[in-house]
Length: 216
Image (cartoon, rainbow, N blue to C red; front, side):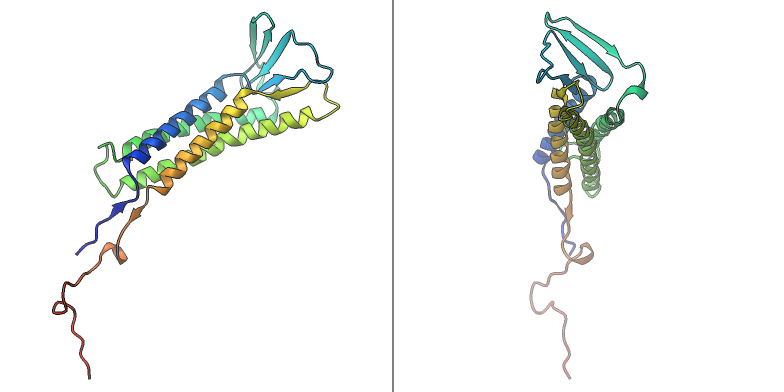
């Protein structure tokens, strides 16, 4: 008699993973679009508060005390620091990968009927979980790199222009953790547990049906 295979998961866990993936994707889009990776600091000798300089991946903005904002895109990618150049590519890849993995989760989830093969669904969701883990790393690495450079420049006494961490740094950290959490849950709850060796197991109801032994 063939032992049944049991999914170590549930539609509820998969729906939670989808929600975590969507939140992580939104955080990645915010980090990529909003120019608030670095902001002017008003510590030390820099006491001019009439305007605030904000820098992002694609543009830099100057916000006046009256609320007027002027933004300008970077003239060339070559003038950007190495961390921002890498952050452009990594955040875009993270957003695309997380969006693709969310669609893959819907395909292989238990609450959808896109795939009717029950043996293939765990493999599909496991693939999506690994993709979400990779997307989370691709989001955490650039924001952590940028934060390290900002802190290093802030503590440099020879640097007159002091910058502080912008809100996008913290949003990126939160989004990366959400993607890692969603991917980890998918990887943990997408395995197949099969009984017996080779997926089969034999059971004997009584001694009469058991194999006989000959004794010499």
